[in-house]
Image (tube, rainbow, N blue to C red; front, side):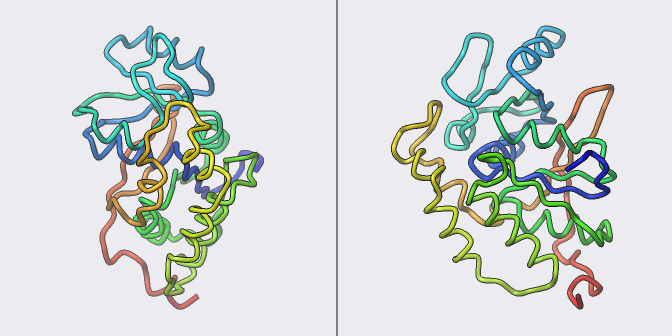
Amino acid sequence: MDGTEQVAVVIDVMRAFTTAAWAFHRGADKIVLAADEDEALAIKACHPGWLALKDGAPVSGFDLVNSPGLIREADLADRTVIQKTTAGTVGALAVVEAKLALCASFVVAGATVRALADAGADSVTFVATGENGRAAEDLACAEYLDRLLAGERLDSGPYLHRADTSPAADDLRGGRRRGAHPADVGLCLEVDRFDFAMKVGLEEGLAVLRPLRTRPDAVSAAHRAR
């Protein structure tokens, strides 16, 4: 990953881009991605009405926690969320200048593939972010997306099993990650829970994530034939 990718899909299943999808479902207008806590708070200082979200334990100045189980209970109608996580947002910032950069997890898998097909993407760089690119759940999701994009008809079960038995899932279930909800693992394993992809790009110097609606039948014949 050197920043020159034409089409990139950044994956963080547990939990950044599952949380982001839930934030959009709960009404968020856009999500601004920050590299670290200081940047998130600096952005918030310039935009007092925006809500700051981080992973880990709650910290003064942050309004939300990087947990789908907690975000699904929040009223985010027309709000802007600033998201900072250890892996997901950092990975997205690394490819934000790509021609097309999407952020993904299992909950937006189908819509992500449709968005890639709509764009006529011939070559896609998949970026697994957790555990320095070695997270079992992110690699499983990347393989699942890649094979769907190639036109294969897949049973999601084996890929979800890899995610469900990953160290990240074990840590969440065991209470070893701060800022977690008991439902987090299950929510991260809901394939196609949402019908939108998530596209990140630069807007006025900020990395902004927005939902990208796709047509249900958008997977092209060309991709199905590959």
